[in-house]
Image (cartoon, rainbow over the protein chains, first blue to last red):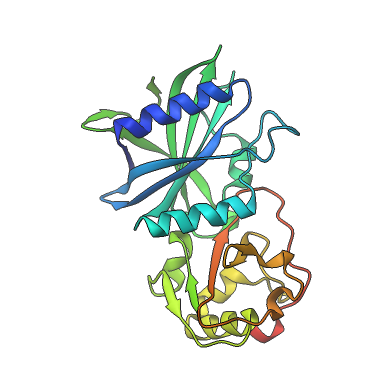
Length: 156
Length: 102
């Protein structure tokens, strides 16, 4: 199982973002560097949900904003390690839509479940495979600072 | 000009994430890049020569699909081209073909 390492500050930032946008979905990018068996995240950057007004249960980062995120990561000497979004009122499990919309193979996708305005569960998934036709999500262990929450869901 | 690739595309480009090329247009740059790294070609282009629907091009942060000349746009040595996978389900392919780079 691969590992996604999150600083505690990033972990809390994801929770705060998910709670602020409830009942809409939040989304953003994770900046980091490759690490043993996965990614070491160094920062999370919020993004606007381009789907928020049209589909409350979906997220999309607009192309122009995605380009800006990639440039921002590069300037910091980091890479886009993955993305995060919330599932208001739904489990922190990837959906068929999440998989269809995921194209950053080798990157992490973090999902937060938000219930009644509170972030309750966070899970990380690696988009594995080599081709679009065979891509799939694999559950990652989530490590926050020096303690392990995983494999599987972490109560937040 | 500089071309930047994110981590998902680097395995098909010798592990590199940045390339400096002397190109006249975006299409020329893509042609040179995929000539050097042939494995990258199938990641960037469909069999019919159209650019893949799963990646987008950005010239100095501008979506190439929105540029009047699209991939025929002339480039300068100071320009940067980023090739990024999309984050949506139904991306729109570019309107123009890419025969020269396919």
